[in-house]
Length: 227
Image (cartoon, rainbow, N blue to C red; front, side, top):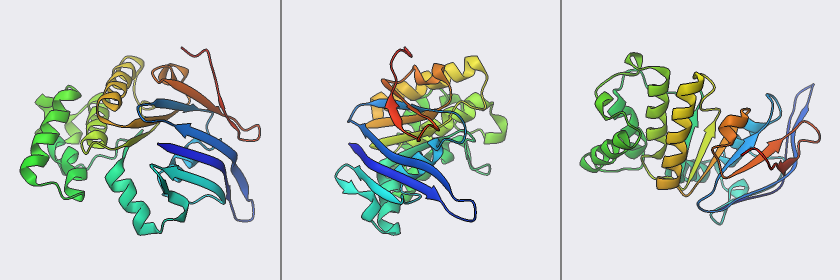
């Protein structure tokens, strides 16, 4: 599904910094994998490149047969909108919309009819265990509840690839465990594949396979023994 070959990225300026160098990485359909690493080694940069939000200096990113590095901005935006879902540490819910309306946003962007959009959002609310909160606003929710809304929003349009960037960084241990379980279950049930970026070994242990990104040449490698 996703194949990355010899990917490198440097941020310029007077103090240019090599963030990623010669990265090779694959995700097959049905896989849920983790990318671990300390802050500042390039984990979020890697996600941004996979999502087409940024372009590498060199290398290729092939997603379901499309070479993202050769697409223009509009084409990458369509791939991102239609075939990817995103879960962030900061939730990014729209405060003026109810939980239900927040979840329906991706469906509106791809032109799903209102009745069908409502039905699909209802299904995701049930799936992540917050159906009773459909009419609530983000300000009325706990951190764990907001993250469940964010997961439902990321998965409601049945994306082929889910990208999760430190989704439990703001949560306590018990809530984080619950959210990770929901995320793993829903990726397996609704999405083609998922990538979890985290610095937590406990979070990484909920995935099928773990990679570690280090500052030592910024190489991505398979790491065994986490589970």
